[in-house]
Amino acid sequence: MDNVKETLTQDIKNALRAGDRRGCSILRLMLAEIVNSEKSVKNSDPLAVLSSYRKKLTKAVGQFPEGDKRTELEYEIDYVSRYLPAQATEEQIGEYLDQIIKDAPDGQFGPLMKQCMGHFGTGADGKTVSKILKQKLGA
Image 1 (cartoon, rainbow, N blue to C red):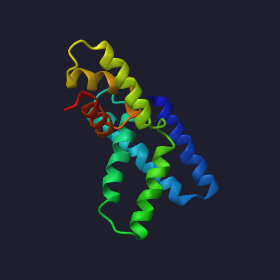
Image 2: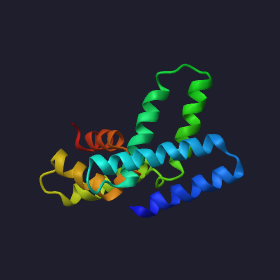
Image 3: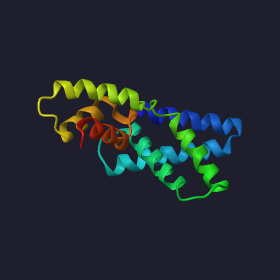
Image 4: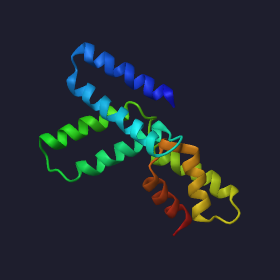
């Protein structure tokens, strides 16, 4: 947990030295999200916090037409994504779901969803997993 915070802190210092004010600002926002989460929720995972932050930014992009604000938000999403594990592809999610559905006797949505999200963690979007699982179960 502290490793992500330490990395962000070091990257803030490096951005300041390099004169990257925009990057420094984004890094500070990311660090603030993690610190605020730690204060409100005990033992929160920094990667989950950053993943949630990226989701908020992605939703916000949809509210702006093409222009400066949208471009700025897309840049910030790209910056945040550098600190998160790579997202699993739909194909990878589908393959894993095929395996666990085969092993699950009852094939209930809830337990399968939980197992898949536990496997991929912040590396898979819940909406994507849900969509693929519903397709596989024929729901």
